[in-house]
Amino acid sequence: MIFGFILGLVITILTGYFAVSIINREMELRFRILFSIPLGFGISSVLYFLYLYFNFNNFKSFRIFEIIVTVILAIIYYNDEKPDFSKHKFKKLSNWFYLLNIYAVLIYLKYFINNPMGSWDGFRIWNIKAEFLALNTPLWQNVFSLPHFMSHNDYPLLLPSLTARLWNYTGGENFAVNITIGLFFTFGLVYLLFQALEYFKSEKIAVVVTSVFMILDIFLVNGAAQCADVPLAYMYLCAIVCLFLYFRKEKFSYIILATIFAAFSAWTKNEGMMFFLIYLIVLLLWMFYKKMYKKAGLTLLTAIVPICFIAWFKYLVHSPNDLIAGFFILKTYHFAFDWSRYAVILKTFANIVFSRFLLLFVLLFLCTKGFRIKEINRTPFVLSCAIFVLCLTGYFAVYLFSPHDITWLVENSMDRIIIQILPVFLFLFAVNLRIGKPDSNK
Amino acid sequence: MILKIHKIPDKIIFRTIFALLILWNLKYFFLIFQIPFTLMFVDYIKNNAFYSQISDIKNSIKDIKDFYDEGKTGFVSDIPQASVFDIEDSIRDFYLTQYAVVPAIVKNDTDEVYVVGYFTNEKDANSVKSHKVLKKINNRTYLYKKIKAEK
Image (cartoon, rainbow over all chains, first blue to last red; front, side):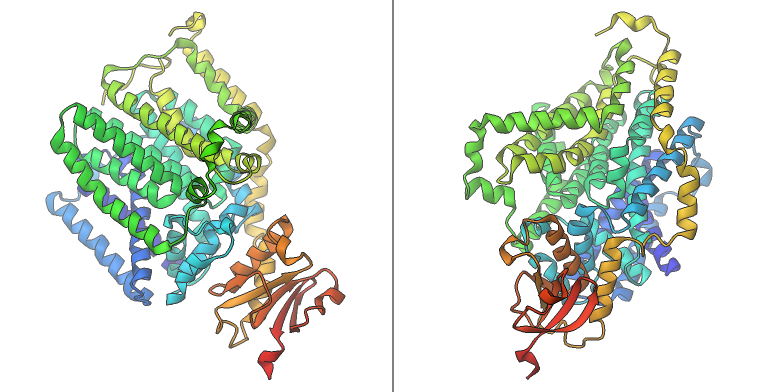
């Protein structure tokens, strides 16, 4: 059982590591490791879903197949570069950061112990689906026939297929899998925010901003909830950081990676589909504006496969999305003129920010020295802000046109929506601060 | 944009933020002792209400050979059928049942051969006319089988 679990985890991380390394051989180790988590988990979940779809019903063979895939990726990578461990140097992080990390892990474990089967949403939406996907019989397809709208049959399956896959590696349902997946996504996201800020700004800012984010109760609650919001936030941040890295390093492979992460966000949750679409539109429009037609073509080519996969998945599911159904059938577009809905959304947003996210306001101290956008960061910052603002508009529109009771909807979901976009917001906020040491020019 | 208080040294700002973080989280100091103890000595999974209810149902159905033949399981409770998805406790019972009977799909009716019922009162538990109580799963949960199906 333990051996199977470790094997499943190692295969996942190594697949992600070698895939990232093949796409960009010169990437620093810290980013390789942090990108390997979402990439490895994403690739594994897609492979497992395809294994289910083609009804192979033989998990042992699937395990061997995954090992072969990992070995092939390793061979491709090391074919051009012999293993040289002297290149892999780990930078020591701040002691303060390590201490706060332990503290955050303890708080995370506290919330996990309270709900080892996940929060209500984690249990009802994601873990029930994982139960179906863990079946090695054609009956797994009953996952698309769950009754009642709260099952969200149209939701993509990155998290449940990942959970089901590792449950199969362990030999059955095992909560160690759930807690491990949650830890990887929660603290992987924290470390990525830290490393990205340390790289593009300074270590002091990285420590402060990440410490505040990491110790937020609401973030750790959602991390332990076994929902897809924190994995989605991870995918968003990966895409944005890759965008910044592209402009710093001038290597197109970062755009490919950013597109892949944006695509995986679409495989994580429906909101990710909106992010993927917005990301593509903003990036392609910029590329056409700069007359970078070849790069635009390559970006589109990278995006075609995930677009086809997501479209095929939605066709397979045959389950209407409640929001889209409401918009066209119940004609919820009339809500655009219902000002009370605007008031409820904004009031709830303010209430939640000033209660559950109150700790974030300590970061206002960092604004005392003002902001300065470095020339090299200007374009990725503007593009990222465009993506961010359009996503915010999209989220607002989702609330505005939803057919469900607006008060119930915003009160039960807005904190999770904020968690999805918060890491990107913190990164964009902190990368242009004047406070702290001058940026390290790597 | 540069604010007038820009002359405050960076060190003071960072230390203020760290001090606020420590004060904000003093309440969690005891976790350093509580969490390792709980993980090592407390069976927190079995104490979880969801887990115990799901285990009870799974243990009740595991020996029933034809339970999954129909692919569907019925659901009945104290709450009227039309209101099952309006009340939080009832929704919770429904989803706990669904989790426990995978790969069968739970239907909010009593048309299926096997039905899982939730009743606080044993008298009410015997009021399901088309089915008879096959097993009492726990204090408020019952497994029913259709009477006609046995003939």
